[in-house]
Image 1: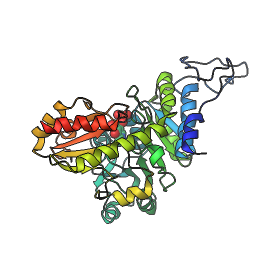
Image 2 (image 1 turned 90 degrees about the vertical axis):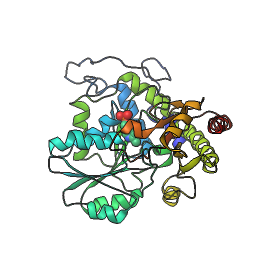
Image 3 (image 1 turned 45 degrees about the vertical axis):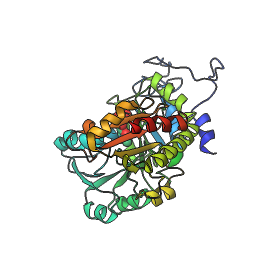
Length: 373
Ligand SMILES: Cc1ncc(COP(=O)(O)O)c(C=O)c1O
């Protein structure tokens, strides 16, 4: 089945109790035990499992083509579950331009617990090979990356990870399973901030891990979900499953709008650079064309005149809201360097743009008026 059909149907079924087509939200924190000690639908206590999370996880497995999915309370919670499944002395290799929260976890939390982490430019495969160690257990990949929009070769990185017995974990938040399926490219685990495109409406916080094999590593990340209770609420699971139904169609519009915006900005004299994998000039364009079915809804731009010109430009925009996050229906713009602080790789004049679902002509007209002043 194609992804549009999977997104509409996976995880959904008519409620056997009432005939309702829309899955009810099960707020109950606990479930009745039968005389023989079993539970009618397998749910005992909502931290361990509940019907809404189970439906969501079935949908996520189907979307990414995995064997097991685990939903978390945030993308960061899902990331943390991967690192918590490792042991002191294990080595994690991450991209130098990974989402800054991922790098902060490694530096500020897991270093103290003895996890050894290194960063490398993953577009340089020779450098990745040199940075691998016998104790590397996870090669963390993020493509396209936040906020530099670098694109890296998932298949080659998975091969390199496997050459030292490490797992390849791909943060697929920006591409979504509609545009990129890392498990099909050889990765072992996919991570999502479902807060973004999967939810799609800027109204929930969530994360997910989807694994190719339901093995002992997955059993360990499941412990963090269930024993630590890093779980999304039934309502957030319900909202997310509802958002996923339109994901493939929303992604088409996000991609088309972002391509139009990137094309317009790439020729504008007030813009020094546009980082969008759909532009043939982007260094990762060929890899993106190979491993993605379209180029996504995210881009970064560098504004001529430096940081203050970039900030002033954001204040003149009317349709792009200055806010963090991405992947919602509304367009957002953000000055990443001031959010990320001293360790940022983002140039001071860089703005990250999440292109929403407004009409592209209106978005371009808004950019035009803001750049003209
Ligand atoms: C690529 C990427 N990964 C992970 C995260 C963290 O997700 P959350 O904010 O849901 O914890 C984000 C959030 O911006 C992100 O953009």
